[in-house]
Image 1 (cartoon, rainbow, N blue to C red):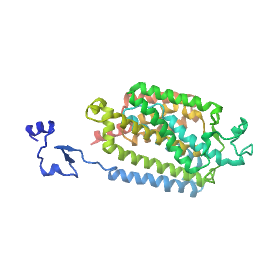
Image 2 (image 1 turned 30 degrees about the vertical axis):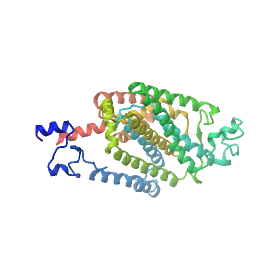
Image 3 (image 1 turned 90 degrees about the vertical axis):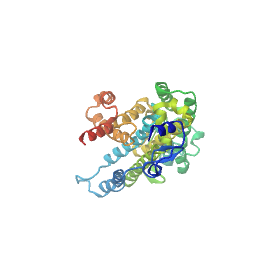
Length: 397
């Protein structure tokens, strides 16, 4: 483009571009004399191949190794491995949600553990009602309510016996809490470390609230001793494998959704907000709506992860809201690589897998390892594992 054309483009004047530059396929779309970037596919050819392989692993290979291969075979996938990987996939959904809000929008949340627990409690309430009269006290009320001499269910348990209502609450409760909090926080232009501290204080306050017996959430012990889900016993190999495969499918679906979202105009605005929010405002965009939308979506994703987590682990209590759990979610995203989507998933598997091994082999050193890992990644691997892999790949070319 000539100097005159460049000047005209900067002034917003339409410029006659060659026919090739006007194509809507490869070079982008011309609007108002400006060449917009071409819309990228959700995944490349290699990406789709990896996606299909991952789908086959969770829906076909894992069930085959667990349910069909004999227990004494070295290829058998144990029930412990199914529960462990299923739990980590729930964590990976939270890490993916953190990447959307932190990696792509630049908002570090230290309260996502609360949204995870809210979804878990919504599912836990339903599972407690499914116990029926099979509890220790043979009552229609959950055992902890009988122990506390409650006579009727509290109002917030009204729809807990409906599976459909529970599915709605899993989405609505974390989403509504996030929307209300984000509405006031973003309109007040709270950002940076102040926002992180407030979210941490919010989840800590919620944890203290759920610890109280009078709130009707089981107090310190929370909910446990689940029997069935939609009338089907939970403690059967087939149901556990179904929950495992469902978690994997939802994780992959959220990954595709996130890829589509960050590749669209909405995602480009989010990244612009992350890099220069003031310039975005001067360009005529309102950052509040974009931040509030991605914040709410991220919270809903964590709520869904919590709902999938509870029937696989068999317990939910207020400790899931501890600030340390929210910090771990941020660590998963940082270790894997922010603003990569696949990086936080890898980070969740690496860190959680190491935690599962270290807490058994060297329980007294686990927290030291976690702190050292976070410091090392911050100092030496600012782009995480995926960033390191991309750097090494460029150097080998």
